[in-house]
Image (cartoon, rainbow, N blue to C red; front, side, top):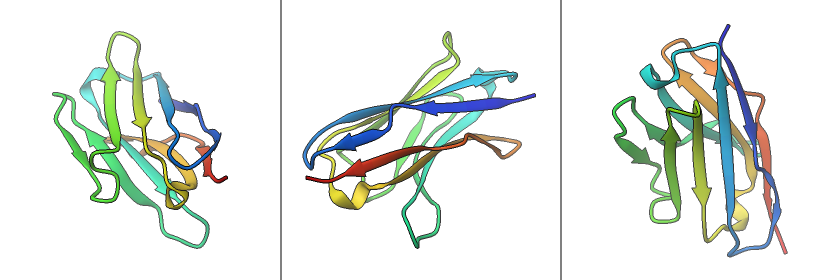
Length: 113
């Protein structure tokens, strides 16, 4: 059974950086499109970044130039490097794998001084 586990969230000051990780198990990781979503309080869940099985990436306009998505198929792990963080980046960040609609439990990111 596919399982996704996020880690790396926390409290950071504006302008700071964090790296999120998503460890996958029970699935042929390299064959999946992997996504990072986030959900802020009172908001809908939104797509932050996507990386296809071939490594093509896509970003939401709000994070372009600040966030970088990557994957290490040998480690069955996806990453999200987040730089120049802003208070509006505060949210719970979720890992998602397609096909199949697999989700992790989320990791909370708080950007505040």
